[in-house]
Image (cartoon, rainbow, N blue to C red; front, side, top):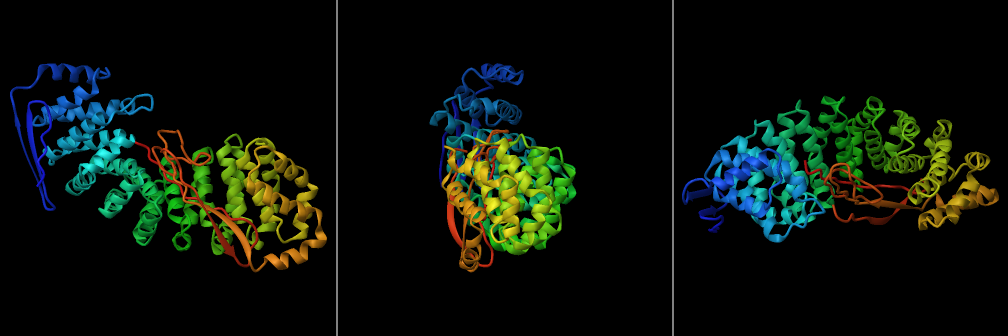
Length: 508
């Protein structure tokens, strides 16, 4: 048993055990008129002069359902400003924020309106790391999942519940706690029960996206066929919704990052068709195009999918994406990564050239001459395409490939991979007599560098990803991203492969 006394003039006793929560609150006196006036001003749009005092006022009136709902709505409305990077959020304020909201949830479990407002406030305030810690510390995950279980048909509760889980999952420790407590099961259940609700599908995809940043979570989520099915159902039922399509593509990309079995499963379940359909339906959305390329890139880390994607027109769609949105540097880099993976398969190489792939790669290199990421990925793609066939090497050389590669290598922005594989490509372009011997030596044991496990964290449209991997308050989008580099031996294929996992927390 654990007793917690909180509030000013209020004595609240919360008794927790595994089966139930009993809350007894007694109000010491009437409603404070000063708090009511502050609440009314806050509702009219004024920012609270003292957020800490405001939170303590909420706790003091925990027995008043109407005031609790109105106050939590105010916290949600001003949440972005409260936890703004420009504002310092001391530990005591983070504690008060989490406690006043969780206290309201415990005191008013049957009240759908209050529960929904509390969850929405947490989804925004939880974008701050200290608040996330306090929510987790005081059994916030348990409260959230219990609310989703108690109100399965309440659309607002299910949407807000998925949103706050997405926000909290930015922290690795909290993400593991959510997974262990059955958070993924609740998210998938919400998506299943409300298939035609775009907001719930969007929030659910975001939650899966962030939970799947963790390699352990990724394996557990992927082990259930329902994880992929719910995401693909969301893409099918909401084909015209660009936000759902974008977040579903990121969720699939995260689940398939460094996970060959998931790549096979998604390909077999028709995931490639859904991703390509999203690219066709949302030609003008750079975000959808970029996320779809990311998903195809991860799926193309296995040989069978490389062929399937090419047969279904994935190469043409990828090329079209950058032609329509060349001004987006992160999309250009993603297209180059995708073409690099697709170009690893010998049967795709000539097709890629015929579709104008080399010209597009050169266009990206010329347009982003000082962008080290684009230069690196374009060179990897060219290296893969021209790895084995002398005819393709000659085409790359005749179109000015040698000069572009030399320029990239000499640039101050050149990475180790740019220099390493650029030199390999130059050797192939300039020394055809060494081709046969080199290919014999690399056909059985080709080293492929694989980038994976990048989590992305951002707020709104701001991305804190590797070069810019995003998702809203995410994790291979929040503070720092993590990147793991692994060396894989790829028999039978040449070149360099890319595989990246991303996650995002939106805090909305």
